[in-house]
Amino acid sequence: MSQSTRPARGMRDFLPDDVRRRRHVIGVIEHVYGRYGFEPLATPALENIETLTGKYGEEGNKLIFKVLRRGEHESSGETDLALRYDLTVPLARVVAEYRGKLPKFFKRYQIQPVWRADRPARGRFREFYQCDLDAIGSTSPLVEADMLSAVSEVLQRLGFNDFTIQLNHRELLTALLNAAGIDSALHPTALVAVDKLDKIGRDGVREDMVSRGVPGSSADTCLTAFEDSEAFEALVAREERGVAARQNVREIMTLADVTVARGHVALTPRLARGLSYYTGAIMEVSVPDLAGSLGGGGRYDGLIGMFSGENIPACGFSLGLERILVVMTERNMLPGGVTRGAADVMVTRFEGEDPVDALRLAAEIRATGLSVDIYPDADKLGKQFKYAASLGVRFVTVAGADERARGEVTVKDMVTGKQFPVAMAEVGARLAAI
Image 1 (tube, helix red, strand yellow):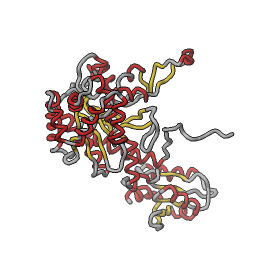
Image 2 (image 1 turned 60 degrees about the vertical axis):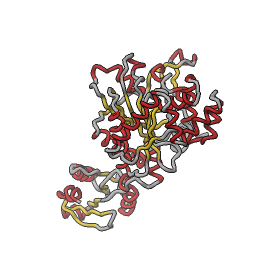
Image 3 (image 1 turned 180 degrees about the vertical axis):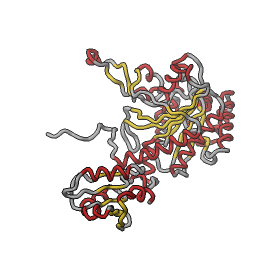
Image 4 (image 1 turned 90 degrees about the vertical axis):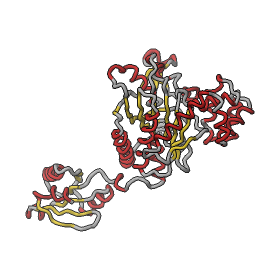
């Protein structure tokens, strides 16, 4: 019986066209993040288990891929390592470890895979890439505004015009839960339920909140406030923390309004984001007809201190590469040239021809900066042309005995179908010029 060749559930293989699409999107993200002064960073796929546990809340902890201890400890079921769940906690560890070597205001971007033991669904995988940018060292609302601008510019350069960056504040939610009469011990679990509002609807969230111990009347008060802005404003204003948080949100929106994020940022009272490490503003990107978001983030001023014991302010945003690609593919937003074949030119082969001639011709053309493939077998020209067309190669060179006798190469343009002779010594420069 043959063995299955499918990748593990929730994991994927990426064929050449897939890789080219991904590189295109990553290239745009890296370019924009770099223009905003963010520096690149990379961290290991594996972290110590204690680095990750206790950082993501009740739901997140269940989704960590744990690694069994090796060797004689394997049968014990003990774990000491885990696959990276996100890029934020590893960043907090890095900042705590290298604080003396990093600038006062450290801005980094990181684009790497993360792993979650989640149930696979449309646009949701167990291994996926996150595209993070984080700013460490400042509590200024300018940090959030600059981040909103960078994310907005990325999305606009990729062709998104109908996105909204939902904005809220964890202290607004805390003030609301207090005003609704929900015990502080139930706040984390209540927010986990609220975070599912777009997925399971009002009735589903109410049922979930009640099952977690939240009184039905308190759940109704919260859910009504999410739909009634006046009720929301009145409830959060009952506490000083709510008033301060509302002012912080206003400042962020005012600053974002002078950037390319203008018109794309909206206060969204129901936005909760389930991760427990958020302490201030929280953000999430939504687009029409997508269950879930293209990315999100927020302020997490207490996370680094869990490693260093020092209170270091921080804010971050993560774009989900997989969901961006799903939407761009469904909407035909990717540029046509993105999936063009790897080679610009293909060199053909003839029966009895010395393969050295093909290698030399290919080298001369590559020296001009073009990419060149060589058809490895001597075959009929028709088959070689058909193969080149299947790869999306633009030009094919033909250098048979007649062409070589004249010191020429015949070039076929696979787009127009036209053929033209070029002097052997000039073929590279001629094709590069075209």
